[in-house]
Image 1 (spheres, rainbow, N blue to C red):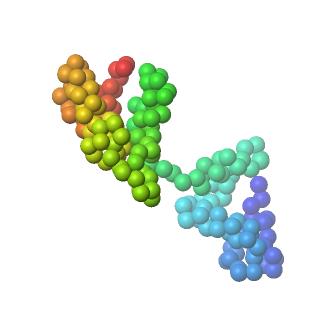
Image 2: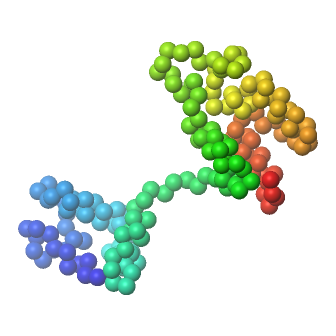
Image 3: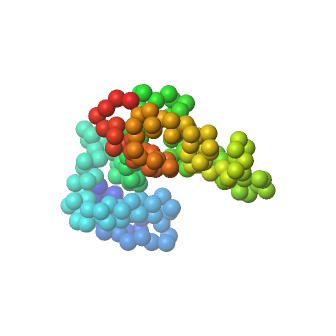
Length: 176
């Protein structure tokens, strides 16, 4: 692929690697130069940049998905994914747990813009937070207590992160 042959307007003889961004360039060309600068920022040397572009080609054709993988933001790996999306967990329960772990479960604390009583509808004791339905509600606490005694679990697990940490630690290599 002839990356050096991409010439810029008004700059005959200069290739894309040697040009500086000009305010008169089109938005598309400015974006191409921004991508070039991103590659330069990661690789650091022109030859390494050329090698990077060559690895984005398959049988002489540019592969967009490979290039996209380079620019796609790298997120942090979440450790609870395998615990939640386990074949032993009912999909409905996995989905609710997935929302809760990300603190996206719709509770009254999430709708603060409405002037509502934020206390839990079932127990009426405290504000309904993401942790409340699982650990703070008296009924939930008693169920957790029964389960912990039945399974001889010594950890108290009073929050979702602590419960997920316990599950990851204890369930390694074991089936549910």
